[in-house]
Image (tube, rainbow, N blue to C red):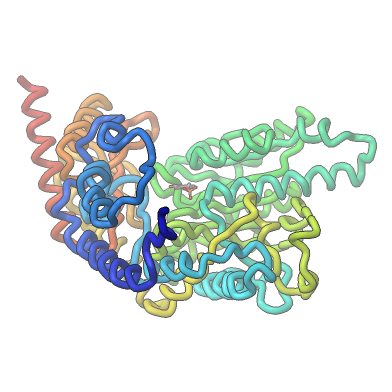
Amino acid sequence: MRGPCVTMDAAEFRRRGKEMVDYVADYLENIEQRPVYPDVEPGYLRSLIPTEAPLEPEKYDDILADVERIIMPGVTHWHSPYFYAYFPSASSYPAILADMLCTGIGCIGFSWAASPACTELETVMLDWLGKMLNLPETFIAGTHGHGGGVIQSTASEATLMSMLAARCKAVRYVQASNPEKSQGEILSKLVAYTSEQAHSSVERASLIAGVIMKKVPTDNSYAVEGSMLKKILEQDKAAGLIPFYFCATLGTTPSCAFDHITELGPICKEESMWMHIDAAYAGSAFICPEFRPLLNGIEFADSFNFNPHKWLLINFDCSTMWVKEREAIIGAFKMEPLYLKHENQESGIITDYRHWQIPLGRRFRSLKMWFVFRMYGLQGLQDHIRKQVGLAKEFESLVRADNRFEICAKVIMGLVCFRLKGSNGLNELLLKKITKSREIHLVPCHLSGRFVLRFAICARSTETRHIQQAWRHITQLSFELLQESQE
Ligand code: PLP
């Protein structure tokens, strides 16, 4: 007879936990020795592991050995100082430890009763962060506010939630003066708008919400101006459509451009449209007074979102979203089965974050915010942002000093868009060479029909020497490429 299976008791967990902390610290300290981009082909992993889960327990040491043998060869090292792709994924030791605590507590905080600390710390952390950004008072929950913040998993979810709330509000609004109109009839006429430079998640939200989406053209700095939105709105209203939602972007994904929200906000107000602001990457920088003017116009927004898990040293996932009127989001999706009700739900504070999101379950993510805010302080966080913007400016200067290259968009934060002067094909080849070398990692974008390389400062450990090394590498590969193209 087999005895009770004790896979790992508390004593062993203590020992293995300390080992794991060492493993992670070693990994992060020595990460630049690893090629930033993996050298594996699709399907590489299946051939390295059994086709079925084991019947008998295996040894922990064997599993750990397989991490280096099977997993690490297929990892793209996002925290390598040679990783310059996409936008950053934040990481810091206090956030990693807080995440460990979150997993240890293991509560599912969908309501106040399901874990009061989980709900209450989240509201207070969103207030703390809202104040760091100097958000208008209407977004702060406090003890009597009508607004407040929530942690969503991703910016995509925040956009979708705002669009669904706006859709619900628009249907009710139209029906109030046209009670004969069916919901289906109204929905078929609702139009959401965003920039042609907006992240694909905005268009995706419209597909999920089942509403028409129109893209607004941008000016020569890749930003939407008020006049551009106004023109499309006039045409659409004349055609009998109902504009209901605009998603502005502060810090677009291709080039980190900023829509003119001081012009767009009043138009949205006039047209009774919901304005959501997606500042997924750039939002973190608004804690610095020198970047805060880019958020002017926020007072017109109904909802605002950015990802501290991108640039504020809080590990994924932590996407913070604020609304002015929380009833607009809570009231849109309320379900009250008996097993989720509790006696404190009408206490006046935010008690049930389950109404603010798509899933029911939610982790204790505000612990990460609390640990990071307390260990870095506002000044430490500002230093981090400023250092990374400084590194981007250093890279920009290197590019500008070499007349074979051009800068393709204004460098405002930690992203540099650049290319070799020449054809798209030439730049595509350069990126292929860079990716194949596995020494640095970048992704491209299209700007005004041109193939452009994006260089985003990502890892917390990136220093001037890494930027210089990356530039030497790019110029070396460009030199080889230009030689080859002349042969
Ligand atoms: N919005 C913008 C402007 C982004 O840059 C990104 C991703 O980089 C997203 C949305 C999507 O972010 P998430 O992965 O949090 O949904």
